[in-house]
Length: 157
Image (tube, rainbow, N blue to C red):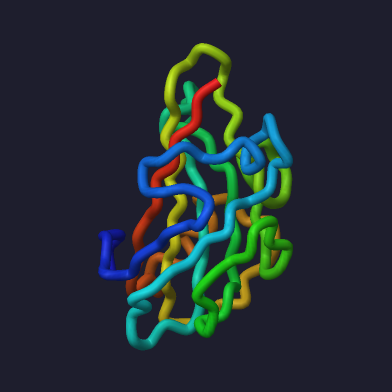
């Protein structure tokens, strides 16, 4: 499947679609990942991956743009949510070259940034190694994606 939105739905009790991300989920606060919940899971889902990306970050490097805040994978197909501050599953590397979640903290005065939280349903348990970047993860999972969708939150400093 090519990367395209599906009926899979993603939401958070912390903020609404296009709503402001609470401070505690940012680099100015407690830097906790927000709780996420998903529904309308595609038949045949064996595992999930979650990514948070800020395309508004003023960064460009070969083959990418913006800033990756979170890469999480090897989430079992039986899951339909992530708890706030989740430490379970396998964490990848964010664009600060650190493992795990790194909350929004755009440059001061740079305006509103949009944070795309993605959930991807996979038709296989891949048992991927820890420490993958977003690009590495997407390369490995692309043939197995059977559904995906996003929740967009905003934040400004």
